[in-house]
Length: 99
Image 1 (cartoon, rainbow, N blue to C red):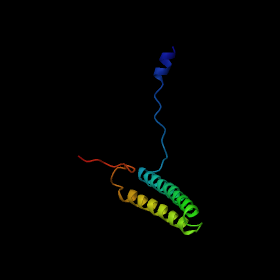
Image 2 (image 1 turned 180 degrees about the vertical axis):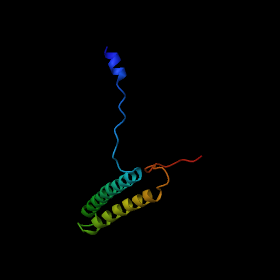
Image 3 (image 1 turned 30 degrees about the horizontal axis):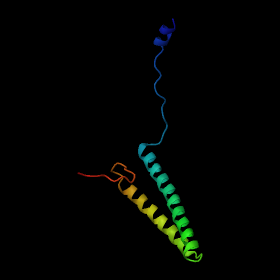
Image 4 (image 1 turned 45 degrees about the vertical axis):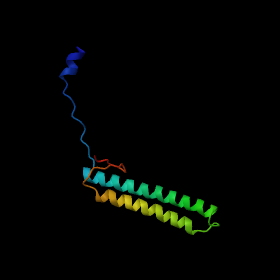
């Protein structure tokens, strides 16, 4: 009896998603990646600047700002290249070996 009732009920269609268009989702994902990369690289650069400032430069401020600038510049270039290669599939920093 249970088999006949379950077979007679129609299959439910998948729920309709009210998501953003695919291109907008990809763009948002790229911006999120760029902002997180900027935060991480800038923090790492400033951290190296603090270490060099304490160890080598008698606690001056310019190594910290220089490290911060290098980190932010590196993140900017990575973000810029990810937006420019929008037509190519993302490889996320992997080197492609060609024969």
